[in-house]
Image (tube, rainbow, N blue to C red; front, side, top):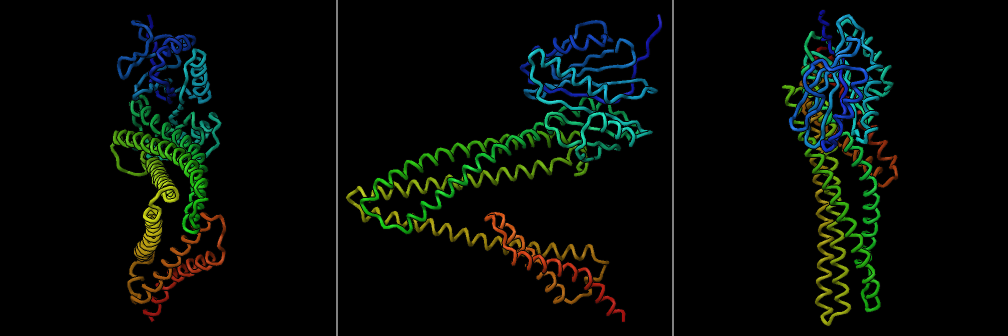
Length: 460
């Protein structure tokens, strides 16, 4: 009996992500694969074992022209099912077939009532026709969005941006290296970690838009209430008004506490999942920020920083709401109690403390501006020396360097201040913005021309 050669050229893989609790997935997937493939290993039955972290089965197409390895990995409460495709070395890969097979696999699982959390298509380009392979893959997956590229050992991996539920990766195999271990073993966990973080970013962004609207309305109400407390005269007719305010403030406090809990939960979840991705990134053994998957970490870290800022803002609003409740309750006690004067003094103290906090905040903002000015000054001077022709900046007098960089730093800080204020107040202050922007451009021109001018004068 003749022996059929087993295809061994890896052309790509597809990943399906489902919950670990979906125990019927093996039966549904086995029934679907059995329509076009036969098990290469005769013994045993096709079952993706949930008792072990990984399980692999090998199938051959009924025409023996395509090999399919089915490999399962467990990632906490999620399972990744990898469908790795192999062809003979002289065959031409069909990305359309790969995408179509993934779509049909998803359909088979969903028909069995199994929810697919996300999918991924990974393709490996022919080393001899890398550009043509990438173009063909882009056309096949119909993903016209921009893509980002990163290093993957001696190869380049492209990630297509745009689809939350399906990710597309294309590996340009510049080196004659075996990518099977990376594609079937390491990549599924990292792909799921990245897809989970991307989905979380989208979900949390929608949630933040809703609760930010609530926070803005609450902050406006608080501002009015604090202003009324400072400028109004208290008398017995205000008792009912104060009680109504306490009821309203209590409702606001409950809403803010719920929103803060949601934001804190988002921070904790995103931080945990980002840490998991960073841990998995170490498997690739490189600290290069441009390498896969570290090229995405900066984006996720920036978003985590943004989430923490929202958390801090909500906590401050919650504290302000509690302070407003305390003030209203104190004023009510003044109007209804026998010790009105003593309690009234306590109210004034609370108001004074609030004003002191506002003054301290203003002082901190001023200090922040000074620190920002120093930082911009320092890095502008260092950057100037770096990009200028070697040694030309050093021949300038201290006064020339100090005045030029000083004006540039002040202009940059002023520009960012007025731009931020305009965005916050939704009213653009054109005059200071244009003046500071003009100074920035003017000093940049001076920084570009001054060293060469002084150098020429020194030569003459």
